[in-house]
Structure formats: structure tokens, C-alpha cells
Amino acid sequence: MSFSNASTGDKPADPYKAANEETVALKTKVDDLAEFIKKCKFGMMTTHEATTSNLVSRCMALAATEAEGLDLLFHTNTESGKTDDLSSDSHVNVSFLNGSGEWASVSGVASIVTDRSFVQKYYSPTLKAWLGDLGDGTHDGSENDPRIGVIRVKATTAVYSLVSKNVVSRVADIAQGALTGKPASVNKLREISADEIKQWRAAVEA
Image (cartoon, rainbow, N blue to C red; front, side):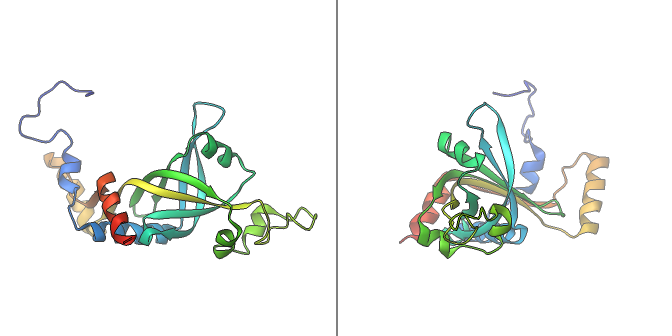
């Protein structure tokens, strides 16, 4: 489907993407994505609400990563609404953004891990502030609290954009583009395809 029937000739219909898309080695793409996500720490997880057709987003703190940075782990209260959402539809998106306008979008399939040894491995005492102590000796926010689980997001595709120039150069490039119509080339836009992710998993799991 296209929203335009106008021919662009030999010029790209999306000149921004053409000017900023960068092809680098798969390891570089994954390593830089993992580093960016680690620095952001907080991301917005979008799920399909179990009881409606709505997409809903929640801020989540990254607990850890797997597959050398590709897969994401987040703590959760298993009694919360998002676990209902994931039980209904496990497909999610997790997006990250920083103050420089750099961003990342990771699409994946989520599962909820409740194995106690796994939960304890990534437990943080600060979780008690979010779960509270119900005073029954069990639901106390500790590493043994049965409400604590881990959402594991196994990536299926990812796209992200990092700045490629300093602020002065970016402003100059954007100003020139506004005057001449030449698309600004100020970012490193990278995509990790489903096939590349399969390739990465095969390598790290070998």
C-alpha cells in the first residue's frame, strides 16, 4: 500500500532514510544497540490490552539482558495488568529515547519467568518499594515474594538511530536541508532484521 501515486523517478521516496541508513557489521549493530539500551535504562513497553483492542505502554526499568545484549529482562509483579496482556498476546515492542533524540525500537515476543532461582538471580531490594509488604510473611517484596517475576523479551527485529555528528554540525546540516531540500544526514539509522537475529542467536548459542 502507498499513500502516493506520484513517481519519484530515480530518487528515493523516503530521502531521510536513504541519507541516514547505515550498513555495518552485525556485531557492531547489536553491540551499539545493547550499549544504548543499557545507558537509557528505562524503556516504554507496549502491549495489546487483554480486554480491548487498545495498545498500551508502560515505563519499565531494564533489569538485565541476554543473548549478549539482544534480549531484554524486566521485573514485574505477576498480579499486574501487563501479565494479563502478555497471556493474551505475547507480542510486544520496547522503545527507548534519550535527550539527544537518539532512539531504539525492539519488537519481540515476551514470556513471564517465575522460576525462583531465575528471579533471585536478578532480584533487587528496590523492588520492595514497588510491591510493598502485605504483612503476611510471604508477600513482603523480598526475593522469595511469589508475586515477583521476570518478563523476558526475545527480540524478533530492531531498529535504532544514533547521532552521527556534533550539535553544531547537525544544526548546520538541517539548516542547509531546509534551504536546499537536500535531506539532512545527521544520524546513524540501523535495522536488525529477523534473519540477522536468527544468525546472531545461532552464533551466541553455539
